[in-house]
Image (tube, rainbow, N blue to C red; front, side, top):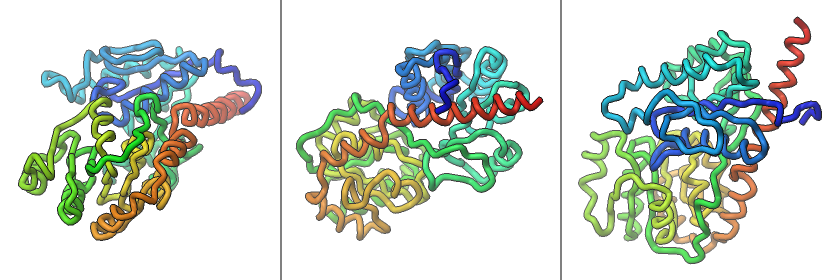
Length: 352
């Protein structure tokens, strides 16, 4: 990091989404990461303003124009909330040395209207339809959350893995017997495959998460629920996750599309829970095959992996998260990215 950068003299705006509170009560991966970035920066001495909903909780300065997440407010119009929120941040851009956006492609359309540099952490590409925006602004500053989740032609400065608050996930000394699924109830996340693994192995499966695809839930999940062997308990908060981890022998993450990062993989490993994940996308970067879980290609391999859980050292799971996926590790990596941006900006304006 260049010695001339003094973080105490730098002001950073962290732009969080407003679908949910920051940090979220239950679901909200992007809000979770934005919160962890803001809190980690504050802890390391940065002057940080978090742009989020008014009910958000932070040690940074909170700047808000949206009362609460539009997913939690039936009266809210999502687009109105989003654009009031994004515009507010960019109207205050001159007050900051950097805007760190976690707001996908929408915030990019404001980035050339201000002098303050904008760093965009790309949490995933939701659809090919959004790519024209990224291509138009491809010369901006970008960070990917895994090497697997990158698009050609964008100006990536680094891959920075998401960091979790390890204090929220105590280590579970003893393995339970249950299989656990945590995530969106959506075909992409392979809940139906987790059910098949549970049925073939004869093990109990607990499913937790928001229902994002009602038809999928109704047709492929609900018919298998019996309240005993296969049970759906709805979305859970951190305490709920820890209750599941305390009873878990393994987390099943049989995603059907390439994973972008997978916060729940790190959360489970932090608690010492092995993860059985489909070998797609970032899963290979987060899970060490045979050491913190198993990477599989199909249901049959997942069932076979259940017979090898005793090979996994639960303490090794925790140690890997401490080393690679902690808030401090993440924020230290972002500090290096920030330093690069500040150096680029100084050179750019010195040449004018």
